[in-house]
Image (cartoon, rainbow, N blue to C red; front, side, top):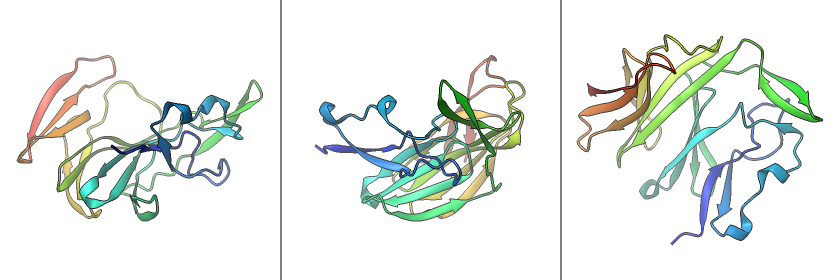
Length: 201
């Protein structure tokens, strides 16, 4: 049994002005005696509300993927946490931030009236990765009439194989074992009815 796991660093932000000077990924021990207490950390900026990503791996490929929540970047690391590839696009999302001081602490937020969203969900197979991409780039936050999303299909080396433009907003994804169908949960608004849908691939 492995003793460590890899997680997204709570204090990381990809922004020169508000950089806490910590790496994007961090190795954590499964020992309960070594769990990092993030609320005790002494960093300049609180950034967790504007940064983050999904972290997943394929052990047979010895690589670790990170898909960003708030921009359109994908990072691929070796199992020793060395960055081997960064995939940017399709929209060139670069969030605008501002600092808000509250209780003598610097909270980093998006500039007023702006929202950003990159990758919403993922699913993997032995050969492929499927990513749900929203692509919100500096527009006002909306909870109604959610936009249709795209699904990107990659191989584990980071090559884009296919793109699928869906007709609905989905926020979870799965594929069947033969990769002939894509499944997702969909809604038109955050308070609306949730439906389970299927698309042929």
